[in-house]
Length: 470
Image (cartoon, rainbow, N blue to C red; front, top):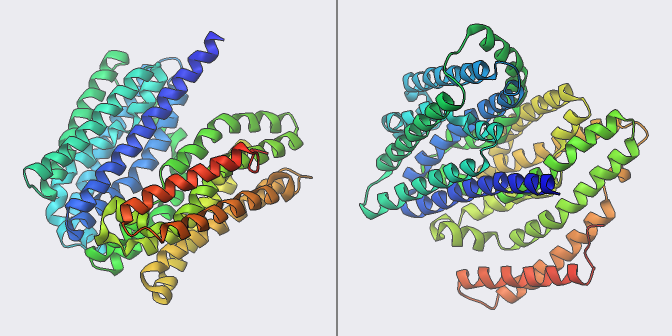
């Protein structure tokens, strides 16, 4: 029982750290959207767009390498080699972007990018090698330290933003502050590795690491690019002020992937074990149960936000971004397909190459449809394209999952009747709340009261078992 309690406590600290980081960055984004002009906010968002295109690829591949090589003999040599390579990679990528900053500015259609990138460059440089800090904490079992460092980092972000507002400074001060925070994280990471490991990288260890990470990097590139390609299309096609409107609306709710990934981290190792044991029926049942469990959370959020997109955007980002609600209403159609993470299931079933192929198809389709729909539907076009291509990608992955689980039917995995029931009830409650909300003129009060009413009625349905986990 003590072992179980220890596992739960550690998992809770990891989840809490992730939630804290996500919410902290969301708060910073909301504050800056309200404080900065659309032109300045577009620049800020585009800086993060570039970083969030590169950093997840690095983090995914080399965090996996930390877990893989960190338990081997001479693990210190591996960790040191990983960190040293990432420091070199950060330097090369930063120099490359600095030299190409005018070309990048033209691609993003933002004249402010070349002159302001130097203030963000140090953040870029030092964020890449510190991408493995969380995985180092987890490897060493320093879960409390993980939470504390995350808390301090988020606090520094928020302090930097409020300081900018208080002393009436603009985007340059904010970018420089982010760079200063990145330097502090780098210094801490360097000292942590010195104390916990060592700093003697070797070429032989690095060669082994790159051999391990190369397939992970290649497989993740198309997936990451596909998630961001619509924003690059919009940035290249419209003025920064228009991109700012799109950027505010083109956001997925961060808490939803957190919910689905939490279920995934618990369930997918079990899927691999069951499949290896030839228990395909049990695999199908487990996937079915995961879908039911996540749908109970995800579908109500989708239903409510579909009717209250305007209120959501205005309350969080202010009335100057009311036009973003139209984009956000398209983007929330991501939520129904987020009830399950399909790619880890393919990996658990040993079909990693299929995932790479489907991700590549998704990228090509997303880019092609994005350009076509831009001409047909205007600013909404790329958003429609990325959502539609994601549904096609999901359908393909579900098809290959069924092909792998020979003898298993779609209805064995996909609880269509249950999902329809939850969605119908959620939409019914959302419509009722919408009618009630139409009687309230103040947008902030309308959002708070209708959200509270929705939650109250929905949980009442759960209480009387009109909605269950199946």
